[in-house]
Amino acid sequence: MARLRRRGFILEGITLGWNVVGVAVLAVTSITAGSVALAGFGLDSLIEIGASTVVIWELSGTGERRQRFALRLIAGAFVALALYLLIQSGLALAAGHHARPSPAGIIWTAVTAVVMFALSAGKARTGMALGNPVLIAEGKVTFIDGLLAAAVLAGILLDTFAGWWWADPVAGMVIVYYAVREAVAIFRHDH
Image (tube, rainbow, N blue to C red):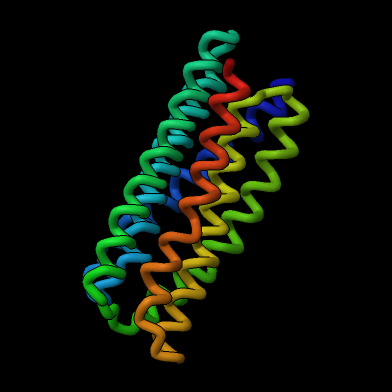
């Protein structure tokens, strides 16, 4: 059990470190490119930092009450992400906002997708072995982070190479469905 808990801490530490670097990279690339999708992905990285911190806090203690509180915090992060992306992407679509090409954004989101999917799988296995619903739920946050990276990458590539300006904000919208679905699932599990 201690070995599994240590693995959970390591997975969360890697996620936390990756996303701290990601916030800086995405801040620069989103401003340089004027990309709604990259800005939304940066916000997702901030939420992932919060979710990882919650799981590290939860893994350091025990108890159903602590788990329920941690799950509510993660669900709240999903709701915040969905609301931000819905508003920001909607405004960009309505204004006809055109992002500029971002080679650094393309590279970062491609690598991040691979890293997040691998971390998500590790968290799911570890959470199941520990019987820890918080680590499992945060693994879903990490999976959604990987999906968002893939959606943002697709949007940036379509915008850059096909000239589809609307692909950037639509990439931000794609993840709203998944974020809302996960928040609802956590709130239902909690009741």
